[in-house]
Length: 356
Ligand SMILES: [Zn+2]
Image (cartoon, rainbow, N blue to C red; front, side, top):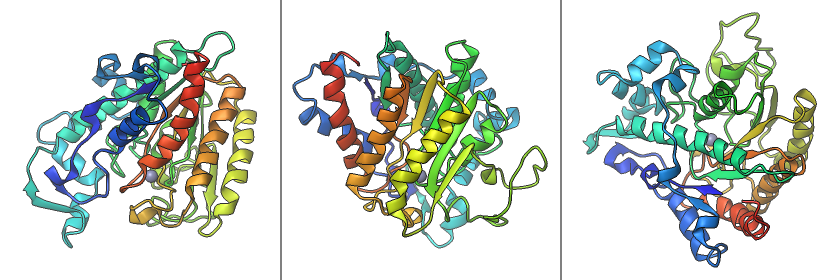
């Protein structure tokens, strides 16, 4: 089942922001699937819209983020500042790189509204994956959105205000729907917020495969040879908190990506066998055609990204682990192609076999 909400498309230009987020990325994915691979399949069999989206309440966010941060997010005087920091608008506006406040045509608090829909979408994605788990069939749902994996307990970061990944898993746990989970994060950037927010909790095991160098691991104080152990010291940037399995791919070593991911998935299974759900942060910004400058160290081809997605999908399906897939990062005019290749391949098979 695919989940889509039309309100997810914010036009960055309306806020004076120059980030190469394709406004219609998720709509492009949906429209291309409708016109192509899924055109002969009734939409009721594979698509769910806004009426299915659950709402996320403040108490859900408070399981993950600090009360002070949540207060700032929901206070009229605080939200703009949080958005400016999470999108690094202020620090870069001096050279006109990312933000021109004089072109602000809509309120920045729209980003909070978007983040809440986003978190609702990821949670609903989890619910839907669990709903379609029947007998030996593996439930699968893909939310065209989600994966705000950089948001930390006390602040937003990297275009992420609310960490929908952890908020959703904590909500599913609190409701007794799951006990354990894997997070499989294949976005180009390390899933640093998710690692910090789940550190020390053996009920959620995290794998992140990402650029070995570069943001957020290029921030001041980072030492690639250090052991960052929050049980010993919290005196470091939370972004340096290790995931249970971190796989850093050095620049120029793209050929290692698939074998190292396969090996990492096996290690994840050793750490926590048979979780109740897997949440995939399936960013496509490692794509060679991605237009965000910070993703340059990874240059994966369309074919490698298809192999990547199928490796993760089949690994989970063969183990009958309900799979909630989010689309996460992907910038510029071409990122939608990667999701279409993957979903256009698996969804006809799933609907034909009624494994929705
Ligand atoms: Zn990313």
